[in-house]
Length: 106
Image (cartoon, rainbow, N blue to C red; front, side):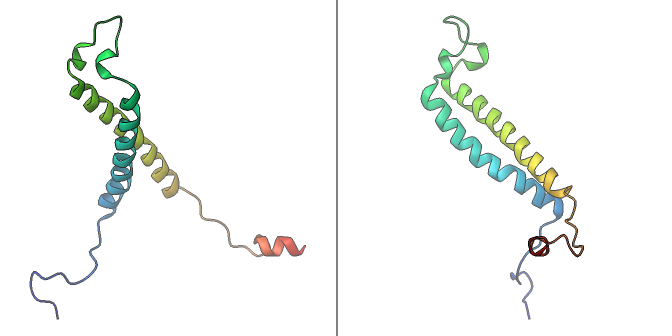
């Protein structure tokens, strides 16, 4: 028997919690790598017209932050689209004669 407050086994996440984790965690990892790769070649201070940086990028850290959240948003959209396609996929039919093994015998 489990004692009150003691972990009793596997915890089931609600569906919404699973979906949020499925979308945001891989997107966070991809955004981290994309930020490192992008800003290894681009200096956010130099991004802009002529020699005047946009006011939002007054410091490099601001540029890095904006870039990271942009990459996170794009990767989150990609994960959301993948999750949507998986959830709305039609189940494959299991009718006789549609299996690959059956087709190869014909």
